[in-house]
Amino acid sequence: MATSPPSPNPSQNPFPNKAAASQPVRRLVNVEDSVLTGLARRPEVVKEFPVLNEINKLPAPKGRCVPCSKEGKLRLATFNAVKRALAGLPTDKKRAFKALFNAETVRVTWREGNVRREYTF
Image (cartoon, rainbow, N blue to C red; front, side, top):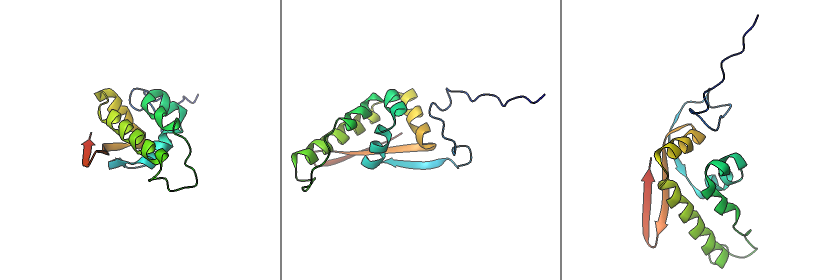
């Protein structure tokens, strides 16, 4: 009689990635706005990291120059706030966030005024 393989331990990777077993571990992942937008579209990720839901609340950009508009400034402020919140996560949540990318290290970069802040965990 054939036995089924043991079920994976959910505490190791809360977001199983089918390709993660065959992919090498990434050394460093830079979290950019586009990455956060993609994560915010995944309900299971937003459930684990509710701060990403702030990105879903942003209005869609209109046909004008986005960086100069109010929407662009709101968008920049929202992404910076989300990145600061990710940098301040507890250790267990940071491990779960790294597991999303199959990464050893994750780097989050944001701006505070004219100063560029960077946090690597």
